[in-house]
Amino acid sequence: MDITQLEPQIIWKNFTALNSVPRPSKKEEKVIAFIKNFGENLGLETSVDEVGNVIIKKPATTGMENRKSVVLQSHLDMVCQKNNDINFDFETQGIQMEIDGDWVKAKGTTLGADNGLGVAAIMSVLESSDIPHPALEALFTIDEETGMTGATGLKPGQLTGDILLNLDTEEDDEIDIGCAGGIDVTATQKYETVKPQGQVVRVYVKGLQGGHSGMDIHKGFGNANVILGRLLYTGISNQNIELISIDGGGLRNAIPREAYAVFAVRHAAEFIENCVALKGDILEEFADIEKSIEIRIENYTSPDMAVSAADSIKIISALKAAHNGVYRMSPDVADLVEASNNIARVELKNGELKILNLSRSSVESTKMAVAEQLKSVFELAGMEVEFSGSYPGWKPKPGSEIVKTMEGIYEKNFGSKPHVVACHAGLECGIIGANYPEMEMVSFGPTIRGAHSPDERANIPSTQKFWGYLKEILANIPAK
Image 1 (tube, rainbow, N blue to C red):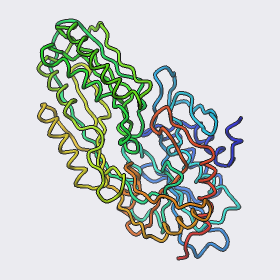
Image 2 (cartoon, helix red, strand yellow):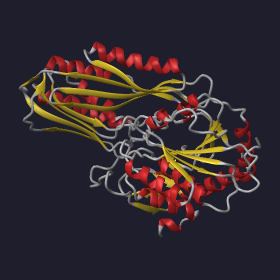
Image 3 (cartoon, rainbow, N blue to C red):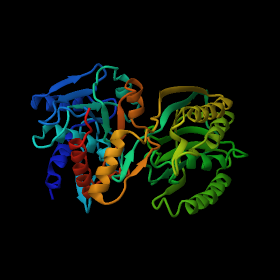
Image 4 (cartoon, rainbow, N blue to C red):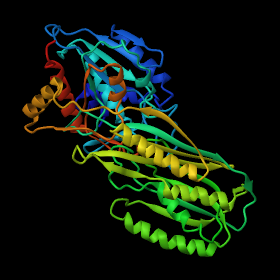
């Protein structure tokens, strides 16, 4: 079945058109031009600000002029992840989609439903002629996934809306009214290299689920960098490991699915024996949640130079000591992760090391506590540490008028109460709210699974539910 024939057809048509345009984070030139042309072709007031955000304005429909004005907001970029056996270039190719039962997914790559379905819904409202709505400002931000520079660069006064509807959450029975802030913690060091002594070995961890480092951090999924660190640690006591290279993980907000290390070890047989024993324990630990995990320990050849045994011990010990996963659960909101860290990327090449972490928290002081703990660990290992990309959380306001309106519509339409929640992901609402403190904000969206991984998929019935819900919300926006 053609995806554009799914209901609601207007959503899937626009999503298909959007997914034909390459849109990696920080390389959004093509999709910015696509959305700009879309607005101009509709004859609507369209502008691109100095950082690349696109704003399209649409007047209120007849009879809705006295309602509060609404900002519809989604981000244009997508996380670009693929399976290793897939040959795909995110900078030049459109996403290849297919239907699998009640789900739409991509062929071996991320789907881009995060946040492409939100973008498609806004496009559908803008081009509609039969949807009642107040005055609208459609805000399409850039670079949400790797730095939120679009939201950060949005200046005060560019928007005039009273209410912001962010269409970027992944459970269709939730109304999100708060989110975590985040900060990047990056450890680096450059080491002198030596000719490796002993047998060269490669350890490879792959086949993990991965997932969103905010929404999935509490689910117990394996982190390939952490597992690799555990395996390496078995050899630092007397095997004299000399690290040659490490390549683990990818994007800051994706739980690492794969990691490998190449190193020389003087007592290879003993190391491999110990490593195999630990491998068995790890496979047993993750047997129920990581069905496809694979750990390889094998002899290898490498012409490259190695980091000394002393420096290798420091690197491995830092990986072993750095916190990963949930740091603290919220004492105020049931089942909400308050603070966490994701050891997202580890790279060692030609003696140059880089370890990238994304620390999150809905409480600013706890966010900094996590970041400072990581800083302490890495500095004790002799590394340089930099904080960057800090962005604020979004404080919940459960009693706002728009939240009450949305709760009432949901209960009337679907016969049950929605879950009014805060999430551990980083939404742009906190950043936008810093410049627009009087704006009421809510986030919601259709059900998406596996975001930030090649397992990403969008639920078809949920997308239809979301579209009907969005249209009724727009028709019932409170009066000014």
